Image 1 (spheres, helix red, strand yellow):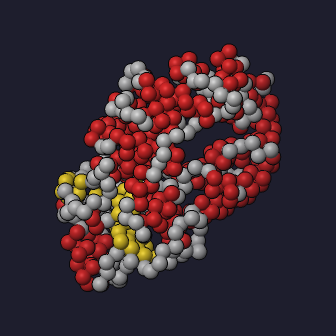
Image 2: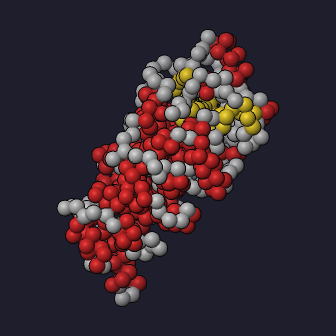
Image 3: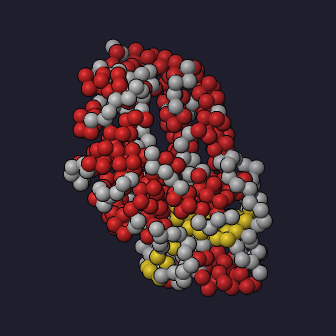
Length: 481
């Protein structure tokens, strides 16, 4: 199996911005896409181009590594659509592998994963392979009546009952009655937030009654704690508008440390909620919610490692980082991660585009306050400017960028060497690829390439302080169930 960070002088290439760069190891490029792609268009690459590149990488990479990387992305980083694509495309190559059935069982984290995988596969790759059928059938063993009812997908083109009829799972004690009722059309959804809210529209006789029933539903869900963390975060605006009297109790759930830690909600989801809530004009209620969101984000990054020595955090503020004003844009993600590091570590902060400059931030401010105070200037992307501006010895330099350097068409290796000689530094350089475009600004032997932007990357960084192959080792440790 290929490994990341193999001793190498790097293979030169041209990145998507037309600048000089280095090719990534194929497995590293695959992981970059898996941990960063939400199947959306990017600044330099459309979603169709991403899928095309993904298919090429699946073809050349070790197939067992691809499978484990997809499971890692789904279960550890919460990545959904891109892992569904991998599950389908990988079927072309692993039909005879002893682990193929177990892969399909492992990649399915929730019942709707199998629905999405099969819907994509039917549209793009035709019939299901035997290993897919057997693995998906086995995955039903994980789910009880509640899960099957919650994700039965009656309004979807590929419903859960269709999959049961397609793969014929063997009933277990946990799901036998649920599968029988699903086939017979008798499986009723539990009182989840979705069913509670949708029920209001079905029984209400007019808009006034509908609003009253929605209010009662939100109050019941929150008082009885029957709403999941992500659903709560996603519906903050609805709760404020439809049931303002329950907001205080909702915020207690929102800032519950155990709920935050157990959740797979990615940090950028807080930014989405923040954007939505601050549009409202509900006065003191909105202020209370914004305060709670700030607190929740600070709790969510509490596992950021405390690094020894001197650390420099560098954020790319060039034009290519701005891909719309939404929570998935690299400039929003990069600012959030910069803020998390500034707040948790005694570190210097620098931004760069055509040039680089030090920026002073107050680590006592909240994470969201820091992130939203960072200005993106546009312009070019010159990685050399980082090391020309760095004026002291650092133990580590953390660069957050889409890796699309182009100014001067020269990579920064030469200026980096001059910086080390002038300061006596030999820093570890962590390069966060926030777009998964697939090229680097340094040869692999000089840099730790990290893809993704959940709190899990901080765990990886902590491991990298002792083990340069931490990410690949984490993936290799994945077991098929």
